[in-house]
Image 1 (spheres, helix red, strand yellow):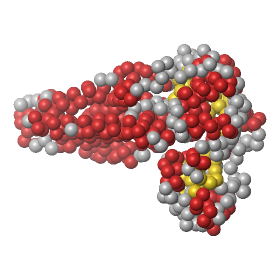
Image 2 (cartoon, one colour):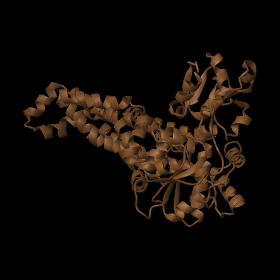
Image 3 (cartoon, rainbow, N blue to C red):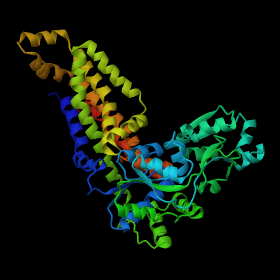
Image 4 (spheres, rainbow, N blue to C red):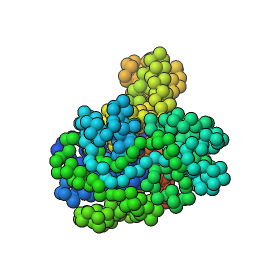
Length: 500
């Protein structure tokens, strides 16, 4: 085996080194064993994370084992995970249930809502006591200049630039229905991350965005909510949505939280977490102790330090990239051999791998949820699929570049097909194969940051949290180590060349 081939396999061993323990732990994400901890999910915005902590800590105070899966995308991702049994409960809103998740059902009151949920093996807690509705907002300066008070006023201003959260942009109870109800003429409409939309509105990069009515950022940033004068938005009362097979003690504990959080309290909790930057676990613990007399507590020893957090995320990231890359090599190299020896089949194989590359990474991750749930397993499968193309191409190109004279010499020595492949062709193609592996490894490191949106952890987790909290330090906590890891993998080839 050549030096470059040994380098490629050494790279693989390095990436997979920490993966075994994580792979075993990841089976808990899809396990339905009674002994497994209850899994509480939350969406990727502050209020949902706080409510997830309230639920998780309340259940722990009742003696139950609970895991909080934080910031797992939007409503549809969590809903699908709940239906599939990948999580056991998460905070949701009645308007989202009626207008987005139970479309086609007749939902006129709570009884019909509960009946629709029961048909799906789900239940909802009593309303928590506050409503967090969608609203359209703009800056006070622009509203004053154009005389904007109601959503209907937008009809006279088609030139306004609209930046909407990606979820709102496509929801049935979001922009499509709102535009139709009001006859809105705005043509410059783009999708943005929710936190980035707030920054864009404040800096006048956009003129209009969707807001949550309990968000403390509205007052802090000087935004103005436009009146929903045609009554488009439904009632968005907060509830805990959970599976009907939840242990009775857990269901009772979630139901007991009904009526415990009014609008002012929720806005204050959001402000503590998003503006004062207190950890959501600490905010939830203080609320439970002061308002409900529940002796919840934050983790022993407080929040881990920066070094501990980076090491933990590095271990998760290496597990994601290492396991996915290992399987990509084990399958991609044989497919590359097939592509080199059978051109017609090779075109189909490479074409299929190219099609996978065109699928947006988040979309592919979402596709995996109904089949494999959330967390480690679907993330590894998606990363494996993204890793195939460079490895297949590298193996096929390396084999096709071997001169016919060398092949003829091997045949003259009486070597069979397998012996010729093992002793002659693969060693000669090792440089190209190693290049494909390195390319896949670098791509994987970057793509794996998206996996945090389905609860797979890694360096993407602080990036997602940093965007949500507008915390540059958190963003860099994930971005810099991920970039350094990618650079380290990409530099292996150059290092070997200098040594030679």
